[in-house]
Image (cartoon, rainbow over all chains, first blue to last red; front, side, top):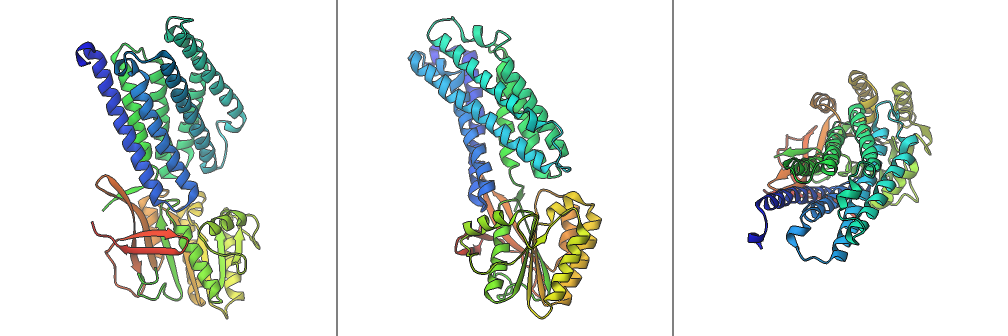
Length: 237
Length: 215
């Protein structure tokens, strides 16, 4: 198989594999923390992060590299992969932002909702829903040959706007929340989450043929690793 | 835990501080401390920033029976006394009154946790409040059991807090190779020599079990 694969694609595959390994290690750390915790509330936070890390690890390997790994993959199966796994991953990220924003408001030192999260939350979910809908339509068109490329539909400047709006707002919520909380651990956690969101945005908008495409993946995976480490303070013996 | 601390539990007329990250089980130690006291006929006060309903749910999850005996609740909602963490003087006054009114009994006072105090007030104000409270606790036959969140405060604040208390127990996550292990250490305890050893621990519905940690 390797003789048929261009070097650039192999490099991409290697970068995705490294990102996936970092994400799987982040998941391992999160589940380790979860096992050590006694209170259900915090266990669920670690479980969420671990599950998201695995989902993103799988998605990163599969999303752009499925053609490399399985050149003769049936189109319906590819459609299912794109729609089910990628959709699930983005929805999980959106829910995770939602939960984190709620926690950050509770941890605000004046308990103030500076970024108007409570009021803007329905709009955030509307943007997420629109983004997901556009993604499904775009992928469906691509797979069933209605348009010749997924990029024609999904990156023509209009359809990714809802996702970008939702993620930009999420970034603002996380940054402001992390600055205003006095909980040093959660401040660190939210800061890395904000960086992960930046990585995800760059991943969406970066041109897939250039080297900049792989950098957001690494940034995103590393941010998740740091998020897992900042779930609880970790000491050295 | 009793076996780890001088084989007889927390010293009389003392203030004990438990440090650990959120969710590691500090509250569970507090629940055990309060409910074992109730079983012995001690007067117990539980001061919390959560509602009484939330605490009762938690207590149930740890296998404790709150259907017969419960402590005096000092909580923002559902308790006999209103707990407002912004109003340290009212908390101080109420706790002193409780101690005075029950001077003829053994008293167990659990405060979960001191971290909101430190988040909402200047640290010096909290140190003063605590120093006064600990003095009051020692005037009566009482034990104060408090918790503080690791990672929420600067090392200077944690060090100052530890200095105020007679006993300090740490529950922390440590990195052991690629693994993370939760370990317990009795950092200091009045009447006992300093202990350097770490213990593996687990909190189950039957209580807490600890065994010496061997790397």
